[in-house]
Image 1 (cartoon, one colour):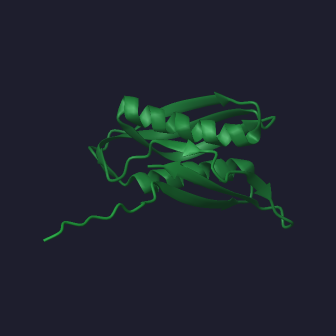
Image 2 (image 1 turned 180 degrees about the vertical axis):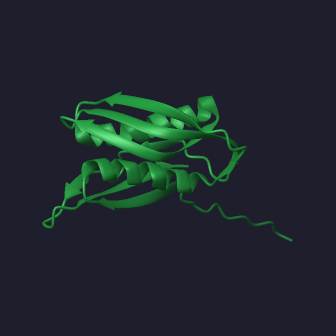
Amino acid sequence: MQKTYQILGTTADVKLKIEAESLEELFESAALGMMKILKPEIKGDEVTRKKIEIKSPNINSLLIDFLNEILYRIEVNKEIYKDFKVEIKDNKELTCQAKALPFQKLGLEIKAATYSDFKIEKDKKGKYKSEVVFDI
């Protein structure tokens, strides 16, 4: 009997589509959506406030850097984040306040937010739109 096998390509990405009335809401929604993708199992109910500050050369880099900073903090601090409040200055600087909770494990791990097919757009109605691809 001849053994056979087949190597199949799989997708190692998840794409998040975001729409918002303002840039700040777009960033908050992107962070919240990323938390949903991670599917964390919360451990306890101890909540702390955290501040995240990012500087980047432009608004596109600012969003990707913001999401990757959150992923880094999740890995290092073993905390998941919620209730994001973002302030953006000159489309190059971001300050975010968020609540942090300890987690037991993640249902899905994200390696990084990527620049694949990424941009931030403002439509004719004034809504901001973006799609972020996460490497999993």
